[in-house]
Length: 335
Image 1: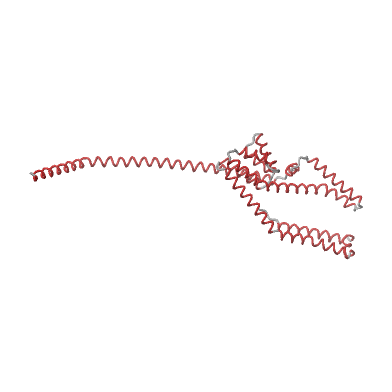
Image 2 (image 1 turned 45 degrees about the horizontal axis):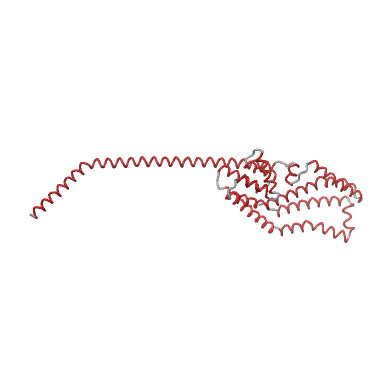
């Protein structure tokens, strides 16, 4: 009985295996076809996805190229305008504005003429030679006021450079706290220190008459022609064209300006010895001539009374001027 049951079970198992084999043999080709079709569909789908990704990547590259070209064109335009402003001879009115004066050129000329006449009167009362009396008003009325104006412009620019990085830090903190750039600039125009306050106030006034922020910042170089101001205008122009983190860009600019200031101070300290030597060498002939005149006037008075002495003094003045000019260029460094 047990042996018969085992035979029956074996027959059933063999029948099941045979049936499975027959089914597999009949369905194998269909399964392979469905598998190949599924693989083909997946490949087509992946190709479509890759095509979409490639197209998206190509569009991003084209967009970045357009933005880069726009930024480059804007920078070239800014550089061109700055070069034109540098080459263009500034009028007296522009120089008075850069010095922070509110007077007109006519008043400036009147002041120079009055100062020249005053010095001429003093020279007449002192009994100076007629050549000195006639030359002194020209030199004092035209040359000295312009030299003083240039000195005041340079001093105002140095004050601006000392305060400008602090103003940029205030703009960075204002932007990080949520204020827009216009409000940050207006904050400097109201709460900053002169001359930074005055220049940013001009930017605000330019915006009020319809100029954009980049154009208003670019106009700042007309009143404060400094490389640091040009850097600021370029940063604002790039941000308006390409976007990005404005607070980080202005913060980096502030750090660059501070490092630039430190480098200038270091170069000035290292060149002080050469400048002192140049001053001593330039003043030595005058000191020696004064000492010789005090000890032996007859050796020096002939230079003022004899025509050959006049020629020698004129040639010496020319050579001394050339030497002083060369030494000045040797000890001055631009950063």
